[in-house]
Length: 537
Image 1 (cartoon, one colour):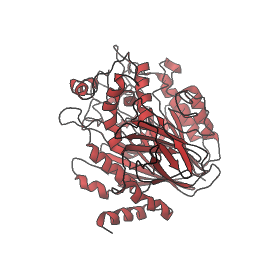
Image 2 (cartoon, rainbow, N blue to C red; image 1 turned 90 degrees about the vertical axis):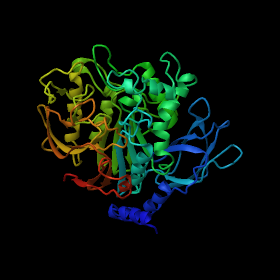
Image 3 (cartoon, rainbow, N blue to C red; image 1 turned 45 degrees about the vertical axis):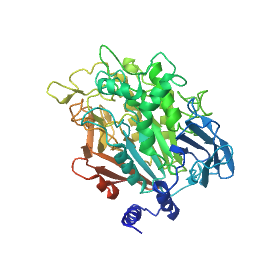
Image 4 (tube, one colour; image 1 turned 60 degrees about the horizontal axis):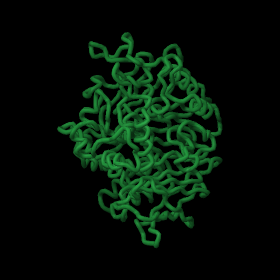
């Protein structure tokens, strides 16, 4: 055993919690540089208890549909683009809690990559004793942009951070928002992003009146988004189910509101870019029996039956249920009655909090409760004042009070859960943080406070940190809240591992400082903070 294998095994043992030996046996397979990816450029899977959905791209177009073999089942690929470079595979009627051997082959049986393993989640009525989930955000960013010193973290370093996270054998991973940075209209960022001359030299120029798939826009999209996703993940997550939540930049703009432009709700063209990126590169959400199939952006005719693009679920038997939701796609600008989350989806979230069959019900929205950086598209009315401090005494232009009303309705449902830990983990803020929300306005949450966390970021550029970039302030607790901070927001790269057991949730938080630590230090990162959230009696 060499030093790296020893460190990997030691880390797994430290965070073991009695995990089955076969879980750790997969770790080497997931990150094994000797595994033959063949013609695969990238591969990202998702599973439920009975289904698998896999997105893949190949180094050259496939003229005929490839076949995925899942155990004894053959699944014919469906093309995700119009040129045969991107394919997806949907396997149903699988056995819960079973580890399958998978392989990819051409129509004449030639292997396209080495075999690998992937397990379905436990059945809905099973009672697993542990579940480990990796959370991170903001892994996007094109290496060639912006021009100058403020580039995103190099792709190889992002991949190294993710490999370190995988060394702890998570059984699922959540990538929360901003998988792509290529802003097109944003007054603050487009000039050094997707609208810049450098960006157009790299990828070309989008035709906003043109179709996205099947025209020149498809080539532009692949050149813009592909390098931000495919090499970051490669095939390392082939045995780790991945759940991607979209946020503002995944619609190819920042959330901004001025007298000249309001970037959200997304325009038709923004929606087509976001949908095409998802279709080609990362899985939509598989159906869940407790999630209505008619929620917005669910069961679309051009998707596999029953998939949801915006509202998702990670259900791990009766141990844990993680509710995933993008707040950008269904946002409204209706003043006191405005919402981020479609009202039918809000009903679904409340119903899952009121149900009692699962030990832990956790929220993972694309927009974080707890903190503010004065952005327009936040839950809160805080804005940066002339003194460069956040304030609510100055009206935030175009901010909608209904957003905070919906926030309070959700926080009320969380604090009223019986026998559960109220817990929300989000991204977006380019920070690592942990706290307890005790009050929101007149809403008293102190009897069962809401635990809130910022998971950490993988790819943020030097000007992406709120305090040094266009925000001009670090993330701070909103003035409308009483928020007790265990970890004040830290502007460093990192990720969070969350362990669920029947009696508690345990968070292990990792950080890496690009300014003071060598890249090699990533390979031995250990948690700098551990927090236990016991279930109330």
